[in-house]
Image (cartoon, rainbow over all chains, first blue to last red; front, side, top):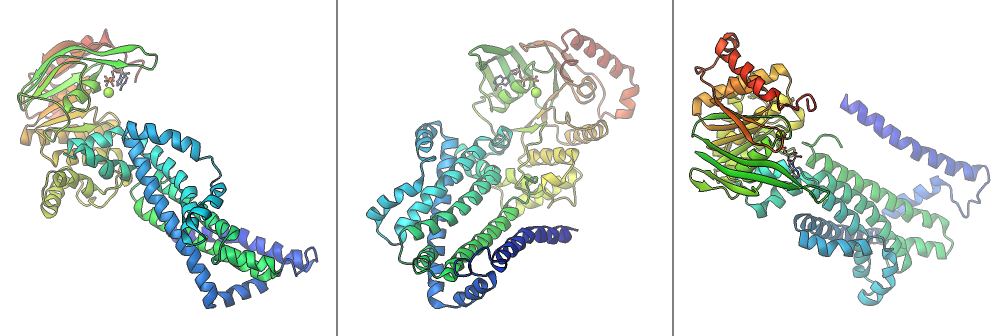
Length: 255
Length: 258
Ligand SMILES: Nc1ncnc2c1ncn2[C@@H]1O[C@H](COP(=O)(O)OP(=O)(O)O)[C@@H](O)[C@H]1O
Ligand SMILES: [Mg+2]
C-alpha cells in the first residue's frame, strides 16, 4: 500500500517535469525559438552526460558543492544555536530580536561586493554570502519552534530529574525538531540559489561561473548544462534532507 | 507528609489586572494517603497541584514535603497530566526509561525496570511503539509508567482520566487502585468527577468556585481493597456521592464547562 502511494507520488512529481521538457522541445520543433538560442533538450542532455565525465566540470561541481555545504552547515549551526538561545533566554532574545528585524529583510546579495573586497574571490566570500542568506529562515523557525514547546513536556523532564540547563538539549531541541527541519529545508533551497548566484557574479570556478562563461561566448548548449546540474543537485540534496527528516521525526504526528 | 499552609496564588492577567486563583489554602496530606481535590473548573485545582509539584511558586504561603520546603520540581513528586505530555520523539520504552536514566541508573538496568513497568500497566508488546501510535488510554498508561519509573513518593495527577471515554476511564481507575494498593504511594488526585473521587480516595477535598478556597474535607470511610461492582451497590458509597454532589452543586460551574 505504502509502496503504491510512493510510486504514484513519484509519477505525479515527474509529470510536470516531462511536460516542461515537451514544451521546450515543442518551442523548437514549431520554430518559435531558434535552436542557436534555445538548444533542443536532447542535445543539452547529451552534453550534460558528456560533461559529467569531464574532469574540469567535475571540479566545478565540487567547488559549488563545497561552498554550498560549508555555507549551509555553518548556517544550521548558527541558526539553531542562536534560535535556541533566544528562545531560552530573554536577555539573548532582547539582543537578537532587533538585529534579526533589521538584517532579515536586507537583500544579502547587496553585501557581496563588500564581501569580495574583504574576503577575496575564493571560497570565503561565497560561503559567507550563503550563510547570510540561509541563516535567517533556520534561526526564525528554530526560535518559534523552541518557544512553542509544551510546558508540560519540560515539567515532566524536570520532575524526572533533568537539571534546568540540560532541558534545552534534552527536551526543547527535540520537541522543536519539526520546526527546525522545516527551516533547514528552506535554508537549503536558498543555499542552492545563492551559491550559484554568487558564482555568476564573480568567480573563477563553480557551476555559476561555467554558465556565465558559456553565455559570454554564446554557447547556448553549455549554458543549460550547469543550470540542469544545479537543479539535479538541489533535487538530490532535498531528497536526502527529506529522508533525514522522516527518520528524525518518525515519532511525531504527520505535519 | 505534604504540608500546604496559607497558600495563595495571584496571576497577572493581560489587562494589567490581577486574578486571585487560590486563596489561603491549608491542607495536610499524610504519607500513603489517596487524596482527591474536587471543584468546578477554574477554581485552581491544577494551580494547587503545580505548586506542590514545584512547577509554580505560590504568591504567598509555604509548601513542604517530608518537612522540606518545596523550591522546585523533584523526583520525589511525579506528575501525571491530563494531556499525557509524552515525549513524541521517544518510543514507549524510551519514555519510561527517561526517568531512571536521569537518575543515573545504568542503561541495562533502566531497560529491565522499564520493561517490567510497561508490563505492569498492561502494555507488554508495545515497547517500541511511538506515542502517536497509541490510543488515549494507552498513552496515559505510558505516562503513568514513565512517572512510576523514577519511584516518586508522591504522585500528582491532574485529571489524568479526564480525556478518556467512560469505559477506558473505569479500567484505568481500577488499575490505578491496584497499583496503589501494592506500594501505597501518596497520591494527590485532581478530578471533577465525584464518583471517581469517592471511589479512589481516602479523603476528598471540595473547593469553592474561584477564588479557590477549601470548602470541606470529607473522609471516605469505605473498606479497601475496593471493588467497583460491590461499591456501586454500597449505600455508604452512594450517600458519599450524593452528599458531595450536593456540596458542589451550589458552587458548580460544570454546566458552563462540561
Ligand atoms: N499562568 C496563568 N496565568 C494567568 N492565569 C492563570 C494561569 N494559570 C491559571 N490561571 C487562572 O487561574 C484560575 C485557576 O486555574 P486552574 O488552576 O487551571 O483551574 P482548574 O484546574 O481548577 O480548572 C483560572 O481562572 C485560570 O484562568
Ligand atoms: Mg485543571
